[in-house]
Length: 576
Ligand code: DGT
Ligand code: CA
Ligand code: CA
Ligand code: ZN
Image 1: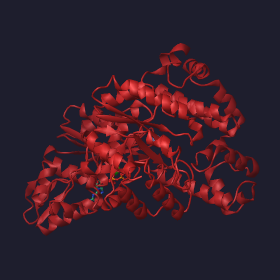
Image 2 (image 1 turned 90 degrees about the vertical axis):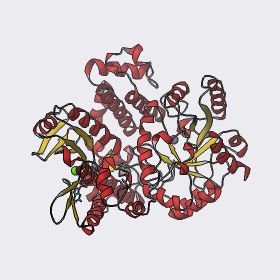
Image 3 (image 1 turned 135 degrees about the vertical axis):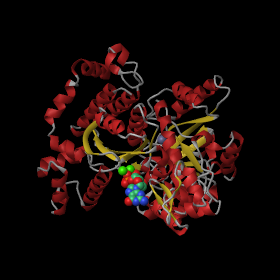
Image 4 (image 1 turned 120 degrees about the vertical axis):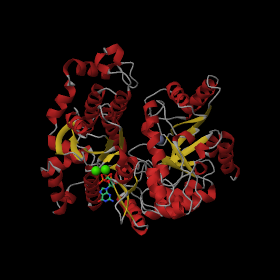
């Protein structure tokens, strides 16, 4: 996607932020937010477009198109500059805290003169914040929690950002003459949900040209260390990249070593020692003679230790080595196994693409079935109505004729209310093919309340999948608290699947909870939750998370043939 689009979208998003601080109209703010997302997702570079062309971007009307034309001409949006001048920079610094809304940020600034995160922390510690009207101990606790979340996310990045960077670096280095192999390793190859730094491994006889190429890449802001074995740089976006270059004959051992995890490697090295061997990034050696035994491929290294090759997503020393010894490694689900997608949105609610475009993109993915699940009415900002829903159902029916190879399912993403109820009555819900139900409000209930809420929604015969079950957003919102074992028991008992939402900031259910749920016999749906065709690219991250949760195709309902899936969906309703 073009850099211009990103810059323009950031300005439009800033406009939304600034308006919400100054008390602007909620629908207008929402419109700017939707437009910002659409601009980022728009496949064409907007810099060459005039007002008429700009209006073709979804969710961009006349007024936003004019602002974008302003941006194309001047590199900025006049209204943003005017609003910025009205709002102190300190308030913007405060709104970066995920749990502090714009209006409260403004109040803190005006009443206490606080204009930075450290000052705010100090004000809270001194008990000054709770004296403001509308603030209390609970607010303080929430804000402190937000500050901690922000700091914790600060030194790690989401997997999509790391992946895009790694793929750019690998592509550039692979072009260098003398580069025999080049891949990313480390936590990214293991598909961890967040990435500390990007580790790239290359094989070459002469490391010099590869190290030089890395430091010369335009995305590099500064060189942290440069050497023959390892070079580290920091990118303009603040992410560290470590490049190691090894001789081609060490490839397998080096890849195994730099993929990690450290804990997995410690266990593997212990096994080598017990076998009278020594394992390093250069190879597997005879401990006594120092003679090289193997190191060309990872498979060889594992095989010589009496193990099958272990998929990187399992290498966390959480039982994978024992499973490998027992011949009990799972046959992990892959992206190719997915036959369908049970959660997606269109521009009828907060998606940015039309029904037609989403369905065309789903067909291009080669899916056998595809569910459209726009937001239900209780999330009032989405302005869903019964009439819109029925009209969409008719549109889906009509569209189906154009896609004989893909079955369209019409459903909804329901909102789980604080008591575990959902939008619409049973009669209306019975008319839908598939219902995902998700928590979108009341994130801070007690564990008891949330457990009851989720168990109750499992008992609803019309709810098939619980969407993004913990409702976390990495770096922005903590997961809801619940007695998960109790929830998993209810899912298994009622035949309710848990979603693995593929959005990089969600990856929800998280891998550790997936694995726990698996022991209760729960089934899963690995869904894109796409709001535009570009979001289908996120599926690889959801699949990575599913693999880290040890899921096989049989555990994932949207790998099943449609008949089997329909049986699963029907079983719940027939229990009603
Ligand atoms: P990250 O960057 O925090 O997301 O996680 P990793 O796993 O990528 O960790 P990193 O970048 O420090 O190291 C990359 C890999 O190199 C790591 O997964 C395993 C290997 N490695 C690094 N340091 C050590 C070590 O002290 N001992 C062993 N056995 N392996 C190490
Ligand atoms: Ca790393
Ligand atoms: Ca590293
Ligand atoms: Zn959704």
